[in-house]
Length: 345
Image (cartoon, rainbow, N blue to C red; front, side):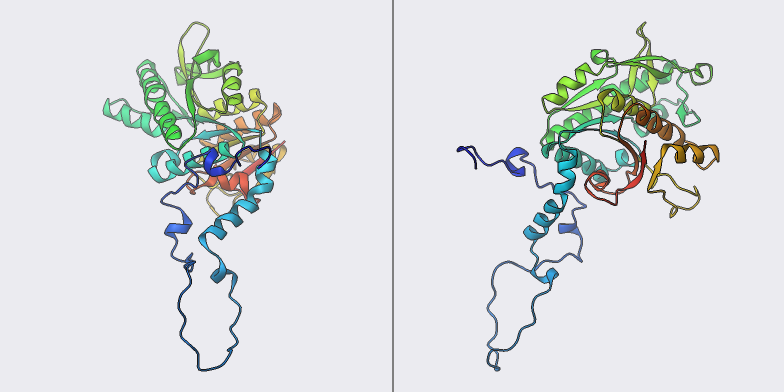
């Protein structure tokens, strides 16, 4: 305590810390059993002053000590990223599973509590597909991008802006932070233009311009912006923009330290048919070579392209991580091992 000021702790900065989820290893992993901290009466030994073996680290550890050790080991990473902007694109399996969704939300709130500046960008493919199915509108994709006619565009706007975005904002607020939901149209954040393949893709757009002023004011006031990937052109026509692309452009405009894309795969694979061939770290030249060789395809193409573009515009690192792994966001930021593939400039 300095000058009579109350000591700041994770608990009083963020009332919901420590977070508990169904995947908490302290409560769900039977192999992590800790002895009770209260003393027990021991039977009297017939041997005077018997030699007792020293307790092992596992036996001497308590849940509290385990938690403190984890936080202590995280300190260098927290110091490295404190005050830095991290743009996270949220989608895929992490949106389908309530447990994984809670994991991502809690990770974001924890990162905010320890001084990072997270920005969430989200899609909503599974939810869009669900509503299209209810209305008997087929979902069509080409080169990893959704074909969007007028009817589909209306559903995309309703689902992403009106449902998914506000649900995520509510969950973040419930977890103890303060989130603000935005679309690309709010505050002129994003201006769209038709895709060069508009004849084939319909109302699929690209980012023509970014004005991050509204985001900067939210970030400076410790809010977590939650941005959905719908934006309008200069004439007010809405467009569906790939959420990975939006995340990359926002990361570049904000001068983010890190761009993170959550996916349904382990990361970039040297062999797409071998899940054990994960590429942990690669530079722009190397990943471009993989694309030329056909090792990167399908929905991974726009992800890699947006990473490369954001790095070329000043983002320090971009990572494609496995959103199926609980707390993959914390693993990527607060450990050396990471949780997928990191691309460097």
